[in-house]
Image: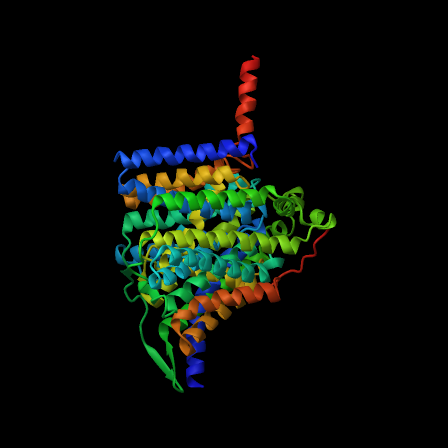
Length: 292
Length: 315
């Protein structure tokens, strides 16, 4: 039982990071039906921005988190403007390959400038641990979970209560109709990219603190897993992405804890295939009927 | 069988073969060039087989490297034990059949998926295959298989590739190939004219996987070393990029694309750190300026040339 609870705690901390990344996927996919492969690399850049901000500027945790979020938001908007907007009318496969291209570009440009080696975060948060009935909580884990929840609450507020959020929901339901109602579709898509990228940037800083090591290719796997989380939660659904992220995090730590850590990635992909076959709409996804 | 275009195709192949042979014998092509030729052959076969799945049957797959790895490992394990030509033949057959069976195993459950979801599911399958190879004892885990006997030379590769591509091409131009293409164009319409879409989707996966298995076997018997890491997502993307560059739904496009991209990547070998950046920029540029690929769905054919000639002479 103690080990079980410990795995849940560890799973929740990893899962909240996945959830933050998954939100970006789900918003973008919900609006323009694109698997933004570059999203995982925005998260990697967020981690590096956090690293440079804390080592060279020396900023503390919150300013570094904010700086990383703002820079990633800008980056997300630039990527959308330069790479995806010209292809709005192109076949889907062309846009997907562009996304893969942008992902490779970010990874290897970063590798060119900072080197392929691993860099270590310095301890930004206290490394205290608390022992509650045999289950160990790290201060960092609690901080990560709380930060993630706070950011998700802000996102939920933006999407449900602001005008821009309403526009986002409208565009995701029907872009043409939204445009007829006077919503600027391009601006709304940019905004969704900015929101998603900001969250990815935050996730990058959090993961840097949690694992304390970052490298230019760190974004690929978490990116794919976060996408799986988004699919599990029901693509396009924001609460779904949160639940999906936490579920994937817990699944992964359980496989690593009780089975073998070598099969961790395989288990997540297997889970994906099961979801796609058993409930392709995901937990909270909308059901779409196909018209002939 | 002895149509003009078939004879012309054989003549062209013979000409290319002789040209390479002469260059190789006179020493203008060294062993470095031979390796490039081998890579071009492998990539051509991979691209044509993926084109069958993605370009002709319209099933988006991001896991082609997984099929290749099954063929490669099966072939390598057999030729390590039987290092002879017969062993290689056995390995090639076993590898490609194993790959086709996995293709079936992937094709059946993913039947109801399409588009992005299918891409992600196939990607997941390929990752699972990679993890399995990482953990199996018989494949020696992450260290991989070493000292695989080299039973291939470029002549073998050339013939195997030419033969396999010809088979793929014949399949596409048969009534079954047309059925695959009609599924790509419109599933519901083809179902309504009596095409068994489930059967043809699975068949496309199995046949594509079969030929990817052959190219994997060629890889294993030429490059000595196999590691699971070679067959990752990046390799699948590489193959997809060749297909898209050449044109989805064009076999001659895939052939040209494979030759072109392999050469570019060989030329950029000296600028290793910049190579991937240039590759990525090229990818984005192609998608922006020519998203249908070099040839679109057209084929380069001799009819095209004769028509052009006639037009010239009529002037």
